[in-house]
Image: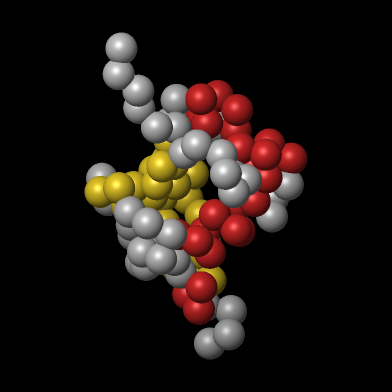
Length: 90
């Protein structure tokens, strides 16, 4: 199945929610590239604000099912993936 995909729930928090204009969306990611890195690349491909805010070197974190993860972490059907700016104390 070359066109198979997994459906995940994306959650954008804080500054990213405001910049993207959406707090949550269901997103289809190809199963052959279901990793955090592939998801971010797919979102950057949307262009404009997504490319700017998720560019390499920008400060943001990714959590899968409420656990902060790295770029190589797999993403499975039904996962919740949150993308958010780092939290600072004060």
